[in-house]
Length: 68
Image 1 (cartoon, one colour):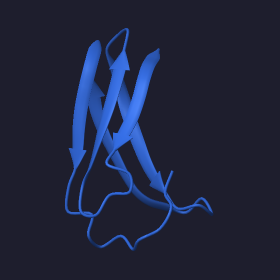
Image 2 (cartoon, rainbow, N blue to C red):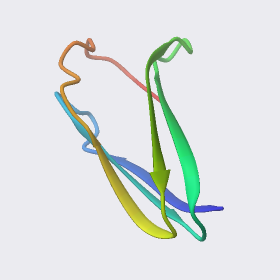
Image 3 (cartoon, rainbow, N blue to C red):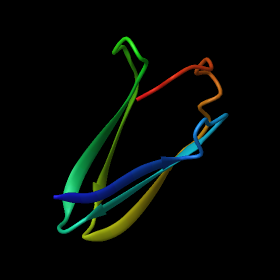
Image 4 (cartoon, one colour):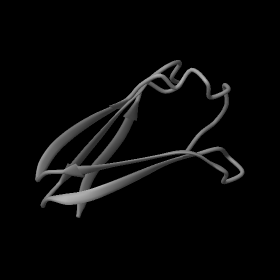
């Protein structure tokens, strides 16, 4: 189970950091979507019990806007 999920800074320019806290080891898939639902990027990694940080870098090709 995910206990905490945050992404910062918001808004971002070239990179974003995602923090996930879980109560067990998991495989995570993060999808970066525009407001209309189009997937702009998909990222996958293994997370371990506790707090995990992942930085997504070189996102300067993504146009400014609202993302979920």
